[in-house]
Image (cartoon, rainbow over all chains, first blue to last red; front, top):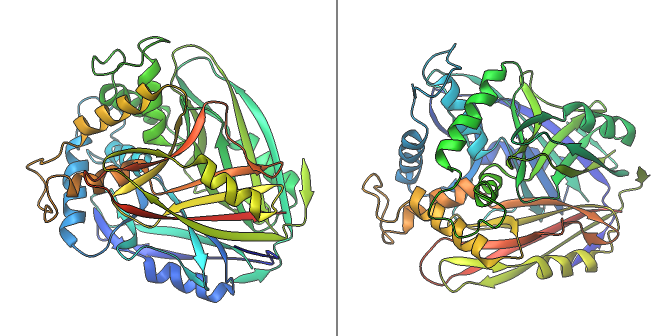
Length: 145
Length: 145
Length: 145
């Protein structure tokens, strides 16, 4: 157990250019903000300023895991589902909102030894739920000492 | 990148009186706690002290988005589902717990410029999952400088 | 509203030995870290370093709630589902990843009066999604004053 003054807060943002529905790993980009913050021990929040993509911590070794995640979610929340009224932007409009609610737009992870602490098989991903490419703004906030 | 002493913590609560299943926007109430905290840069946690409602960040412009969210979740977790044993409080009892697990009871967002930083189309909502009105207690904690 | 210097950060970890798929309550273990931190008011992050179990806040009184949660999730994400490619570790391999994404690997809760603040019916649980027993590492980080 370490107890010490919590004397640092740092905040920075970056933009992810997605290529349509699918995953973009952002572990390194988040790690850069944490490294630059000067925080040794604390926590980091990663936040997406959007309602049709999500942030998640997922398995980072086998890309078929992410393909399977996409396949499961596409079946659970099908594009063009007749129960949806909100479809101004197309058949993937409302499904993207449901997907974002189910998988979340905000993550918190520990900072330990000046780095984000993740398990061996964990990576941080942005999951684009719209079919078209988008620019997604992410804010990273680091607190600790 | 700003790095500065993290010298403030503030915590306050409020109660949401729901009118049964549906959404109540709490963006302004959370914003008031953030404004009163004196924190300029940091993060805010919004926490619900209940297991049958949830907190979420969702699209805040078109009310049909929330109607569609409700319609999707009602189909995925139907009231009165025969697989549920726990139904002391009625057919919406156990579905409310499943809904709360899937959508979450805790949110974290950045504080920037003395305000909660949300995307243009993001609002913070309490989602009541019980059919009857309830009083829901929310705790807001702000950390930063 | 209390506003005071945020002058403490504490971080500690523990391991949960699961007995295969199911729930282990960790409320007391998290509470010990919070009590030892010396933080009176602030927030706590509980983080799992794994991609096939999750952390959740659920009803803590009636064990049938957890049985029903398991039954609902087992139906929504069936073991051995033919849509999954990733099955090196068996029919529960990819379902465990999907379950972890849907229910989350990180929690944040308020610290109030030197204790984690939970509702009367809330408990913190680790949900093992693999069929076999595993050792799961949890990191707890407390920030506040």
